[in-house]
View (cartoon, rainbow, N blue to C red):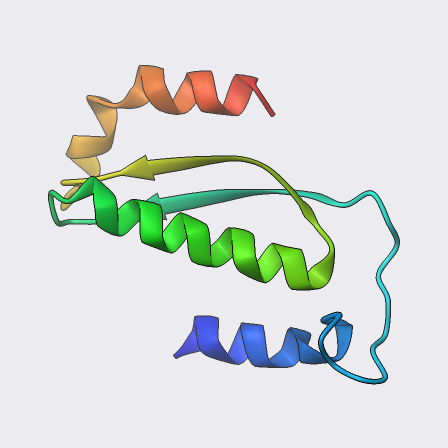
Length: 90
């Protein structure tokens, strides 16, 4: 619900809304999806949705990271190298 409210509040800045406000150019963003389920395809769909949303705001998506099977914070520790590598590319 909170993410939906965030998206709705961004509508005036979307290039599909007329007239639309503009944000300063050159913005870059990253897409990160964390799931408890094992399917990477679901993470990819979430990342694609975020990238699509960025497109309407004219934000360049510079990368994405999907992490599956993350049910407890301890599961993140095993993926620390992957997360660190992703952050270093930012």
